[in-house]
Image 1 (cartoon, rainbow, N blue to C red):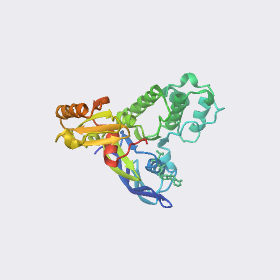
Image 2: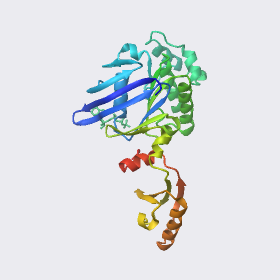
Image 3: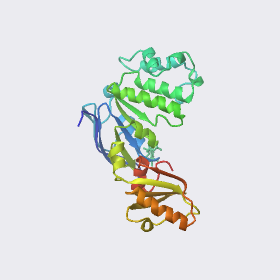
Image 4: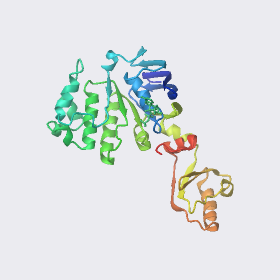
Length: 306
Ligand code: ATP
């Protein structure tokens, strides 16, 4: 494997009775985007906060940037960048003042103007934080995370609440960072974000890792199946037996029926027969390949965002 930026072995953290992180092991290769994907409360933030040095683990081994550590100290923090959630900056500071302030926390920071250029906020250098749009604030937050020229960057839900264009701007900045050799640890519950950015995804649920691999490898866990989706009419769905041996499963997800098939043509022919016999139109039908959301659904019976 490529050089590791982070290795975590059997990490555990409980809050009273809640096992927030319950024996988690993973390796983050250098210059990769490593994503923790999971629903609310899965333990992603707790895992990140331990690696960022904000919380101590109860148990487990941690190696960061080649150093085996009990807890993350000041020297390692000099080489880390952390994206703060938007809205945390003083609204009456100007953009360049925010960057200067954060630069003052480090021994050898980058120049604020260089960072402003990198996150495309040069024309906002003198603007007050309170006048920035959500996407601009998030780019400022990313700039703050980059002010010390870190090797390892933590992005905890970097695009939550952003519109699609602002989200894509952040994605292209993230891709540029790994191209420059930086390692990114990302958490998200946006499946599309995990799919388009990650080299490696760990799916987390109830404090444990339930699957890991590249987005392609994870989707391949569902085999070569194709998914047929449609809205159930009055709650009726065909049985897998009726749809024939190529049909691997029929799942229900709210109003939606998901049919997994290894032979689209054969299953579709049976589905059309069923639709005519049951007088049930296949409303809003789509045919697609499995994605990370389907992997999660097939492993847990739940959606990432409930
Ligand atoms: P989200 O996507 O909502 O941010 P998450 O995957 O990041 O969720 P965590 O925030 O790590 O999950 O929370 C994991 C579990 O630990 C949850 O059940 C949460 O309620 C609990 N928890 C987190 N922080 C604390 C705390 N300081 N005290 C008590 N329980 C906590």
